[in-house]
Amino acid sequence: MGEARIKAGIWVSAALRMGMLENKPGVVVRKGDVDAGGVLVKLYGRTGCVVLSQFRDMEGNLAWMRATGPAPVDEQTADEYIAKQTRFDPDLWVLEFDAADYRPPFEGKVV
Image 1 (cartoon, one colour):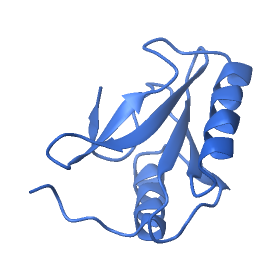
Image 2 (spheres, helix red, strand yellow):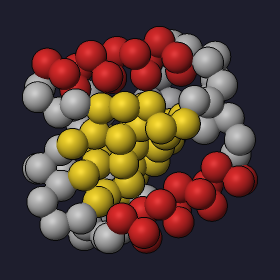
Image 3 (tube, helix red, strand yellow):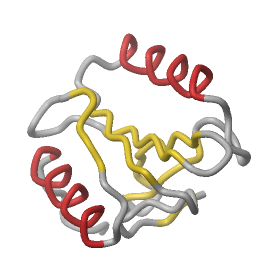
Image 4 (cartoon, one colour):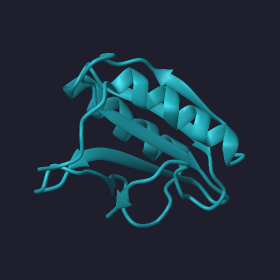
């Protein structure tokens, strides 16, 4: 069985706090469903942006996929991806973090 699932709103609050602790300030750009919404994370780095998409692996554990590919993309490409996903799933949260190293301030497997 996978890890216990917490409500999206609580997870988002914790991620923002972790960002402040790691000197990677973050903001909520789009508020999703507070109980069960998925999360997209846009990381601003040195040469562009990376968008991480939340998913559950086969064991039910939280993991992150580099939704915009392995290399950073320009902000317009990242925003277009986010817009497409929010049209498909109106319950999505969108967070943005300043992360020069493209690593999220929270724990989780990134694939």
